[in-house]
Amino acid sequence: MPAVPGLSRRAIAIIFCVSMATAIGNTGLQSVLPSIGRSIGIADAMVAAIFSLSSLLWAVSSPFWARQSDRLGRKPLMIVGLAGFAVSMVLCGLVVSAGLAQLETPVVIFGLFLVCRAIFGLFGAASGPAIQAYIAERTSAAERTRWISNVAGASSLGTIIGPVIAPFFIIGIFGFAGPLYAFALIAAAMLFIVARFLEEAPTSSLKPLFLIEKEAHTPLWRSTNLAPFIAYGFLLSVCQNAQAQTLGFLIIDKAHKALPMLDPPALLRIAQSHIGIAMVSGAIASLLALWVFIPLFRMTPKCLLRWGAGLAALGNVLVAFSPDYLTATAGYALSCLGFSFAKPGFVAGASVSVSMKQQASAAGAIGAINGANVLLAPFAVSFYGIFAPGPFLLASVVLVGLLAYTFLNPSLRHAGSAVRDHNDTSE
Image (cartoon, rainbow, N blue to C red):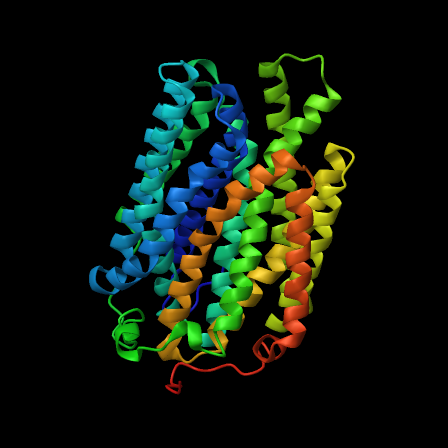
Protein backbone atom coordinates (compact mmCIF):
# COMPACT_ATOMS: atom_id res chain seq x y z
CA MET A 1 0.00 0.00 0.00
CA PRO A 2 1.68 3.22 -1.11
CA ALA A 3 2.06 6.02 1.39
CA VAL A 4 0.30 9.33 0.87
CA PRO A 5 1.28 12.79 2.16
CA GLY A 6 0.69 12.95 5.91
CA LEU A 7 -0.34 9.31 6.13
CA SER A 8 2.62 6.97 6.62
CA ARG A 9 2.81 3.35 5.54
CA ARG A 10 2.94 2.24 9.15
CA ALA A 11 -0.14 4.27 10.09
CA ILE A 12 -2.03 2.87 7.10
CA ALA A 13 -1.11 -0.69 8.07
CA ILE A 14 -2.10 -0.19 11.73
CA ILE A 15 -5.45 1.42 10.91
CA PHE A 16 -6.11 -1.32 8.36
CA CYS A 17 -5.42 -3.98 11.00
CA VAL A 18 -7.54 -2.25 13.67
CA SER A 19 -10.53 -2.20 11.32
CA MET A 20 -9.92 -5.79 10.28
CA ALA A 21 -9.52 -7.04 13.87
CA THR A 22 -12.79 -5.42 14.95
CA ALA A 23 -14.60 -6.99 12.00
CA ILE A 24 -13.04 -10.38 12.74
CA GLY A 25 -14.41 -10.31 16.27
CA ASN A 26 -17.87 -8.99 15.43
CA THR A 27 -18.59 -11.28 12.48
CA GLY A 28 -16.94 -14.23 14.23
CA LEU A 29 -19.26 -13.69 17.19
CA GLN A 30 -22.22 -13.26 14.87
CA SER A 31 -21.41 -16.55 13.14
CA VAL A 32 -21.36 -18.59 16.38
CA LEU A 33 -24.16 -16.77 18.21
CA PRO A 34 -27.06 -18.84 16.79
CA SER A 35 -25.30 -22.05 17.84
CA ILE A 36 -24.53 -20.58 21.27
CA GLY A 37 -28.18 -19.61 21.74
CA ARG A 38 -29.53 -23.02 20.80
CA SER A 39 -26.89 -24.83 22.88
CA ILE A 40 -27.83 -22.86 26.00
CA GLY A 41 -31.55 -22.76 25.27
CA ILE A 42 -31.97 -19.02 24.59
CA ALA A 43 -34.87 -18.22 22.26
CA ASP A 44 -33.87 -17.15 18.75
CA ALA A 45 -35.38 -13.66 19.05
CA MET A 46 -33.55 -13.14 22.36
CA VAL A 47 -30.28 -14.16 20.70
CA ALA A 48 -30.78 -11.45 18.09
CA ALA A 49 -31.68 -8.99 20.86
CA ILE A 50 -28.26 -9.47 22.49
CA PHE A 51 -26.95 -6.85 20.09
CA SER A 52 -29.80 -4.41 20.77
CA LEU A 53 -28.55 -2.62 23.88
CA SER A 54 -25.03 -2.52 22.48
CA SER A 55 -26.31 -1.00 19.25
CA LEU A 56 -28.37 1.61 21.08
CA LEU A 57 -25.37 2.66 23.15
CA TRP A 58 -23.25 2.74 19.98
CA ALA A 59 -25.73 5.11 18.32
CA VAL A 60 -25.93 7.37 21.37
CA SER A 61 -22.21 7.45 22.19
CA SER A 62 -20.78 7.88 18.66
CA PRO A 63 -21.25 11.69 18.54
CA PHE A 64 -19.78 11.98 22.05
CA TRP A 65 -16.65 10.03 21.12
CA ALA A 66 -16.35 12.07 17.92
CA ARG A 67 -16.08 15.25 19.99
CA GLN A 68 -13.71 13.64 22.48
CA SER A 69 -11.34 12.67 19.67
CA ASP A 70 -10.74 16.38 19.06
CA ARG A 71 -10.00 17.02 22.73
CA LEU A 72 -8.00 13.90 23.56
CA GLY A 73 -6.57 12.91 20.18
CA ARG A 74 -7.28 10.15 17.68
CA LYS A 75 -4.88 7.56 19.08
CA PRO A 76 -6.24 7.57 22.67
CA LEU A 77 -9.77 7.06 21.36
CA MET A 78 -8.66 4.11 19.23
CA ILE A 79 -7.17 2.62 22.41
CA VAL A 80 -10.44 3.19 24.28
CA GLY A 81 -12.37 1.43 21.52
CA LEU A 82 -10.06 -1.56 21.41
CA ALA A 83 -10.03 -1.84 25.21
CA GLY A 84 -13.82 -1.82 25.30
CA PHE A 85 -13.89 -4.50 22.62
CA ALA A 86 -11.41 -6.75 24.44
CA VAL A 87 -13.07 -6.41 27.86
CA SER A 88 -16.52 -7.02 26.38
CA MET A 89 -15.37 -10.17 24.57
CA VAL A 90 -13.75 -11.63 27.70
CA LEU A 91 -16.85 -11.01 29.80
CA CYS A 92 -19.14 -12.41 27.08
CA GLY A 93 -16.92 -15.49 26.92
CA LEU A 94 -17.26 -16.01 30.67
CA VAL A 95 -21.05 -15.67 30.42
CA VAL A 96 -21.21 -18.21 27.58
CA SER A 97 -19.03 -20.60 29.58
CA ALA A 98 -21.40 -20.27 32.52
CA GLY A 99 -24.37 -20.91 30.26
CA LEU A 100 -22.83 -24.00 28.67
CA ALA A 101 -22.08 -25.33 32.17
CA GLN A 102 -25.73 -24.63 33.12
CA LEU A 103 -24.69 -22.53 36.10
CA GLU A 104 -27.68 -20.24 35.53
CA THR A 105 -30.96 -20.29 33.65
CA PRO A 106 -31.03 -19.23 29.98
CA VAL A 107 -32.88 -16.02 30.89
CA VAL A 108 -30.17 -14.98 33.37
CA ILE A 109 -27.44 -15.85 30.86
CA PHE A 110 -29.23 -13.74 28.26
CA GLY A 111 -29.36 -10.75 30.61
CA LEU A 112 -25.67 -11.03 31.52
CA PHE A 113 -24.70 -11.45 27.86
CA LEU A 114 -26.75 -8.37 26.97
CA VAL A 115 -24.96 -6.23 29.56
CA CYS A 116 -21.47 -7.52 28.73
CA ARG A 117 -21.99 -6.95 25.02
CA ALA A 118 -23.24 -3.42 25.84
CA ILE A 119 -19.73 -2.53 27.03
CA PHE A 120 -18.60 -2.80 23.42
CA GLY A 121 -21.42 -0.53 22.27
CA LEU A 122 -20.52 2.12 24.84
CA PHE A 123 -16.72 2.10 24.49
CA GLY A 124 -16.08 0.32 21.19
CA ALA A 125 -17.79 3.18 19.36
CA ALA A 126 -14.78 5.39 20.17
CA SER A 127 -12.59 3.86 17.47
CA GLY A 128 -14.70 4.61 14.39
CA PRO A 129 -14.82 8.43 14.52
CA ALA A 130 -11.15 8.52 15.58
CA ILE A 131 -10.07 6.43 12.58
CA GLN A 132 -12.15 8.54 10.21
CA ALA A 133 -10.74 11.78 11.60
CA TYR A 134 -7.18 10.41 11.57
CA ILE A 135 -7.50 9.73 7.85
CA ALA A 136 -9.42 12.91 7.02
CA GLU A 137 -6.92 15.32 8.54
CA ARG A 138 -4.01 13.66 6.74
CA THR A 139 -5.46 13.36 3.24
CA SER A 140 -6.94 15.62 0.58
CA ALA A 141 -10.60 15.40 -0.38
CA ALA A 142 -9.75 13.44 -3.52
CA GLU A 143 -7.60 10.93 -1.63
CA ARG A 144 -9.96 10.53 1.30
CA THR A 145 -12.62 8.51 -0.49
CA ARG A 146 -10.01 6.04 -1.68
CA TRP A 147 -8.48 5.52 1.76
CA ILE A 148 -11.80 5.30 3.56
CA SER A 149 -12.84 2.70 0.98
CA ASN A 150 -9.63 0.79 1.73
CA VAL A 151 -10.52 0.78 5.42
CA ALA A 152 -13.98 -0.49 4.49
CA GLY A 153 -12.21 -3.20 2.51
CA ALA A 154 -10.22 -4.09 5.61
CA SER A 155 -13.48 -4.59 7.48
CA SER A 156 -14.76 -6.79 4.68
CA LEU A 157 -11.56 -8.83 4.82
CA GLY A 158 -12.17 -9.24 8.55
CA THR A 159 -15.65 -10.56 7.84
CA ILE A 160 -14.01 -13.30 5.78
CA ILE A 161 -11.47 -14.22 8.43
CA GLY A 162 -13.80 -14.11 11.46
CA PRO A 163 -16.26 -16.86 10.47
CA VAL A 164 -13.42 -18.96 9.04
CA ILE A 165 -11.28 -19.02 12.17
CA ALA A 166 -14.15 -19.08 14.72
CA PRO A 167 -14.78 -22.86 14.46
CA PHE A 168 -11.09 -23.60 15.11
CA PHE A 169 -11.42 -22.07 18.58
CA ILE A 170 -14.43 -24.22 19.53
CA ILE A 171 -12.21 -26.61 21.42
CA GLY A 172 -12.01 -28.56 24.67
CA ILE A 173 -13.46 -27.09 27.81
CA PHE A 174 -14.05 -23.71 26.13
CA GLY A 175 -16.60 -24.99 23.61
CA PHE A 176 -18.52 -22.22 21.88
CA ALA A 177 -16.96 -19.65 24.26
CA GLY A 178 -13.50 -20.33 22.77
CA PRO A 179 -13.84 -17.93 19.82
CA LEU A 180 -14.78 -15.08 22.15
CA TYR A 181 -11.63 -15.49 24.22
CA ALA A 182 -9.57 -15.67 21.03
CA PHE A 183 -11.09 -12.47 19.65
CA ALA A 184 -10.37 -10.72 22.95
CA LEU A 185 -6.69 -11.67 22.61
CA ILE A 186 -6.63 -10.30 19.06
CA ALA A 187 -8.10 -7.00 20.28
CA ALA A 188 -5.57 -6.81 23.11
CA ALA A 189 -2.71 -7.38 20.66
CA MET A 190 -3.99 -4.57 18.44
CA LEU A 191 -4.35 -2.30 21.47
CA PHE A 192 -0.66 -2.83 22.25
CA ILE A 193 0.33 -2.16 18.63
CA VAL A 194 -1.67 1.08 18.47
CA ALA A 195 -0.32 2.29 21.83
CA ARG A 196 3.27 1.45 20.96
CA PHE A 197 3.61 2.11 17.24
CA LEU A 198 0.93 4.49 15.91
CA GLU A 199 2.31 8.00 15.58
CA GLU A 200 0.10 11.00 16.12
CA ALA A 201 1.99 14.15 15.30
CA PRO A 202 -0.23 17.20 15.69
CA THR A 203 -1.69 18.53 12.45
CA SER A 204 -2.30 22.24 12.74
CA SER A 205 -3.32 22.81 9.11
CA LEU A 206 -6.89 21.69 9.70
CA LYS A 207 -9.38 22.85 12.27
CA PRO A 208 -10.56 19.92 14.44
CA LEU A 209 -13.30 18.23 12.45
CA PHE A 210 -15.71 17.37 15.21
CA LEU A 211 -15.45 20.64 17.14
CA ILE A 212 -16.60 22.45 13.98
CA GLU A 213 -20.00 20.92 14.61
CA LYS A 214 -20.53 23.12 17.67
CA GLU A 215 -20.10 26.20 15.49
CA ALA A 216 -22.11 25.06 12.50
CA HIS A 217 -25.44 24.27 14.24
CA THR A 218 -26.70 22.86 10.95
CA PRO A 219 -30.16 21.26 11.35
CA LEU A 220 -29.05 17.87 10.08
CA TRP A 221 -32.42 16.20 9.62
CA ARG A 222 -33.84 19.23 7.81
CA SER A 223 -31.06 19.37 5.25
CA THR A 224 -32.45 18.61 1.82
CA ASN A 225 -28.94 17.58 0.74
CA LEU A 226 -28.05 15.22 3.57
CA ALA A 227 -31.31 13.83 4.96
CA PRO A 228 -32.11 11.63 1.92
CA PHE A 229 -28.74 9.89 2.24
CA ILE A 230 -29.28 9.28 5.96
CA ALA A 231 -32.76 7.89 5.34
CA TYR A 232 -31.46 5.65 2.55
CA GLY A 233 -28.54 4.47 4.68
CA PHE A 234 -30.70 3.70 7.69
CA LEU A 235 -33.22 1.59 5.78
CA LEU A 236 -30.46 -0.14 3.83
CA SER A 237 -28.62 -1.02 7.05
CA VAL A 238 -31.83 -2.30 8.65
CA CYS A 239 -32.28 -4.70 5.73
CA GLN A 240 -28.65 -5.80 5.84
CA ASN A 241 -28.64 -6.52 9.56
CA ALA A 242 -32.02 -8.23 9.48
CA GLN A 243 -30.70 -10.61 6.83
CA ALA A 244 -27.39 -11.20 8.61
CA GLN A 245 -29.01 -11.88 11.99
CA THR A 246 -31.59 -14.26 10.50
CA LEU A 247 -29.29 -16.15 8.14
CA GLY A 248 -27.68 -18.31 10.83
CA PHE A 249 -31.02 -19.64 12.05
CA LEU A 250 -32.12 -20.34 8.48
CA ILE A 251 -28.97 -22.36 7.81
CA ILE A 252 -29.34 -24.33 11.05
CA ASP A 253 -32.91 -25.19 10.12
CA LYS A 254 -31.92 -26.24 6.60
CA ALA A 255 -29.15 -28.43 8.04
CA HIS A 256 -31.70 -30.03 10.38
CA LYS A 257 -34.02 -30.68 7.45
CA ALA A 258 -31.24 -32.26 5.40
CA LEU A 259 -29.76 -34.28 8.29
CA PRO A 260 -32.62 -35.13 10.66
CA MET A 261 -30.85 -38.19 12.03
CA LEU A 262 -28.09 -36.21 13.79
CA ASP A 263 -28.22 -35.31 17.48
CA PRO A 264 -28.30 -31.54 18.31
CA PRO A 265 -24.58 -31.07 19.18
CA ALA A 266 -23.39 -32.76 15.97
CA LEU A 267 -25.98 -30.89 13.93
CA LEU A 268 -24.91 -27.52 15.35
CA ARG A 269 -21.25 -28.19 14.55
CA ILE A 270 -22.09 -29.02 10.94
CA ALA A 271 -24.42 -26.03 10.69
CA GLN A 272 -21.70 -23.82 12.17
CA SER A 273 -19.35 -24.73 9.32
CA HIS A 274 -22.15 -23.98 6.83
CA ILE A 275 -22.76 -20.59 8.46
CA GLY A 276 -19.05 -19.81 8.22
CA ILE A 277 -18.97 -20.70 4.52
CA ALA A 278 -22.01 -18.52 3.81
CA MET A 279 -20.54 -15.53 5.65
CA VAL A 280 -17.20 -15.95 3.89
CA SER A 281 -19.00 -16.05 0.54
CA GLY A 282 -20.73 -12.80 1.40
CA ALA A 283 -17.49 -11.20 2.52
CA ILE A 284 -15.72 -12.23 -0.70
CA ALA A 285 -18.56 -10.63 -2.67
CA SER A 286 -18.08 -7.47 -0.58
CA LEU A 287 -14.37 -7.40 -1.34
CA LEU A 288 -15.06 -7.81 -5.04
CA ALA A 289 -17.38 -4.81 -4.87
CA LEU A 290 -15.01 -2.60 -2.89
CA TRP A 291 -11.65 -3.50 -4.41
CA VAL A 292 -12.53 -4.64 -7.95
CA PHE A 293 -15.83 -3.46 -9.40
CA ILE A 294 -16.02 0.05 -7.90
CA PRO A 295 -12.50 1.15 -8.99
CA LEU A 296 -12.61 -0.83 -12.25
CA PHE A 297 -15.84 0.73 -13.48
CA ARG A 298 -15.29 4.05 -11.65
CA MET A 299 -18.77 3.83 -10.20
CA THR A 300 -20.25 7.12 -8.99
CA PRO A 301 -22.35 7.43 -5.82
CA LYS A 302 -25.50 7.57 -7.97
CA CYS A 303 -24.65 4.26 -9.67
CA LEU A 304 -23.68 2.66 -6.36
CA LEU A 305 -26.96 3.61 -4.74
CA ARG A 306 -29.01 2.14 -7.58
CA TRP A 307 -27.04 -1.02 -8.30
CA GLY A 308 -26.65 -1.67 -4.58
CA ALA A 309 -30.35 -1.56 -3.74
CA GLY A 310 -31.31 -3.57 -6.82
CA LEU A 311 -28.79 -6.39 -6.31
CA ALA A 312 -29.50 -6.60 -2.57
CA ALA A 313 -33.23 -6.93 -3.31
CA LEU A 314 -32.60 -9.77 -5.77
CA GLY A 315 -30.36 -11.52 -3.26
CA ASN A 316 -33.02 -11.39 -0.55
CA VAL A 317 -35.62 -12.85 -2.91
CA LEU A 318 -33.22 -15.69 -3.72
CA VAL A 319 -32.68 -16.41 0.01
CA ALA A 320 -36.43 -16.27 0.70
CA PHE A 321 -37.21 -18.97 -1.86
CA SER A 322 -34.01 -21.01 -1.47
CA PRO A 323 -34.73 -24.75 -1.46
CA ASP A 324 -31.37 -25.61 0.07
CA TYR A 325 -28.28 -24.26 1.81
CA LEU A 326 -26.30 -23.61 -1.39
CA THR A 327 -29.01 -21.45 -2.92
CA ALA A 328 -29.35 -19.49 0.31
CA THR A 329 -25.58 -18.92 0.32
CA ALA A 330 -25.67 -17.69 -3.28
CA GLY A 331 -28.50 -15.30 -2.44
CA TYR A 332 -26.64 -14.02 0.60
CA ALA A 333 -23.49 -13.41 -1.48
CA LEU A 334 -25.50 -11.49 -4.08
CA SER A 335 -27.07 -9.39 -1.32
CA CYS A 336 -23.63 -8.63 0.15
CA LEU A 337 -22.43 -7.52 -3.28
CA GLY A 338 -25.34 -5.11 -3.44
CA PHE A 339 -24.93 -3.83 0.12
CA SER A 340 -21.22 -3.24 -0.52
CA PHE A 341 -22.10 -1.09 -3.51
CA ALA A 342 -24.80 0.84 -1.69
CA LYS A 343 -22.99 1.61 1.60
CA PRO A 344 -20.01 3.45 0.04
CA GLY A 345 -22.57 5.11 -2.22
CA PHE A 346 -24.54 6.73 0.57
CA VAL A 347 -21.45 7.49 2.69
CA ALA A 348 -19.60 9.16 -0.19
CA GLY A 349 -22.77 10.81 -1.46
CA ALA A 350 -23.50 12.25 1.97
CA SER A 351 -19.94 13.51 2.35
CA VAL A 352 -19.73 15.30 -1.00
CA SER A 353 -23.23 16.76 -0.63
CA VAL A 354 -22.24 18.97 2.31
CA SER A 355 -19.53 21.52 3.04
CA MET A 356 -16.43 20.84 5.12
CA LYS A 357 -18.13 22.57 8.03
CA GLN A 358 -20.84 19.89 7.99
CA GLN A 359 -18.57 16.85 7.70
CA ALA A 360 -18.78 16.17 11.43
CA SER A 361 -22.57 16.16 11.27
CA ALA A 362 -22.51 13.68 8.42
CA ALA A 363 -19.96 11.43 10.13
CA GLY A 364 -21.86 11.46 13.41
CA ALA A 365 -25.15 10.64 11.73
CA ILE A 366 -23.63 7.77 9.77
CA GLY A 367 -22.06 6.40 12.95
CA ALA A 368 -25.41 6.62 14.73
CA ILE A 369 -27.36 4.72 12.08
CA ASN A 370 -24.71 2.00 12.09
CA GLY A 371 -25.81 1.29 15.64
CA ALA A 372 -29.51 2.19 15.60
CA ASN A 373 -30.46 -0.07 12.70
CA VAL A 374 -29.56 -3.24 14.63
CA LEU A 375 -32.36 -2.54 17.10
CA LEU A 376 -34.88 -3.90 14.61
CA ALA A 377 -33.08 -7.21 14.02
CA PRO A 378 -34.94 -9.10 16.83
CA PHE A 379 -38.24 -8.34 15.08
CA ALA A 380 -36.86 -9.87 11.88
CA VAL A 381 -35.88 -13.04 13.76
CA SER A 382 -39.33 -13.20 15.39
CA PHE A 383 -40.92 -12.79 11.96
CA TYR A 384 -38.71 -15.62 10.71
CA GLY A 385 -40.11 -17.87 13.44
CA ILE A 386 -43.64 -17.16 12.20
CA PHE A 387 -42.99 -17.22 8.44
CA ALA A 388 -39.48 -18.20 7.37
CA PRO A 389 -39.32 -16.31 4.03
CA GLY A 390 -40.96 -13.24 5.61
CA PRO A 391 -37.92 -11.17 6.71
CA PHE A 392 -36.19 -11.62 3.37
CA LEU A 393 -39.28 -10.77 1.32
CA LEU A 394 -39.95 -7.70 3.47
CA ALA A 395 -36.32 -6.59 3.03
CA SER A 396 -36.60 -7.00 -0.73
CA VAL A 397 -39.72 -4.79 -0.78
CA VAL A 398 -37.92 -2.08 1.21
CA LEU A 399 -34.89 -2.30 -1.07
CA VAL A 400 -37.03 -1.98 -4.20
CA GLY A 401 -38.53 1.10 -2.57
CA LEU A 402 -35.03 2.49 -2.02
CA LEU A 403 -34.21 1.83 -5.66
CA ALA A 404 -37.24 3.85 -6.69
CA TYR A 405 -36.23 6.55 -4.18
CA THR A 406 -32.87 7.00 -5.92
CA PHE A 407 -34.74 8.00 -9.09
CA LEU A 408 -37.41 10.14 -7.42
CA ASN A 409 -35.38 12.17 -4.90
CA PRO A 410 -33.36 15.04 -6.43
CA SER A 411 -30.42 14.69 -4.02
CA LEU A 412 -30.05 10.96 -4.68
CA ARG A 413 -30.72 11.38 -8.39
CA HIS A 414 -27.72 13.72 -8.64
CA ALA A 415 -25.57 12.08 -5.95
CA GLY A 416 -21.89 12.89 -6.37
CA SER A 417 -22.41 15.36 -9.19
CA ALA A 418 -20.95 18.25 -7.18
CA VAL A 419 -17.99 17.69 -4.86
CA ARG A 420 -17.25 20.33 -2.25
CA ASP A 421 -13.67 21.00 -1.28
CA HIS A 422 -12.07 21.68 2.11
CA ASN A 423 -12.25 25.40 1.66
CA ASP A 424 -15.94 25.47 0.84
CA THR A 425 -17.68 27.02 3.82
CA SER A 426 -21.10 27.35 2.28
CA GLU A 427 -24.07 25.74 3.90
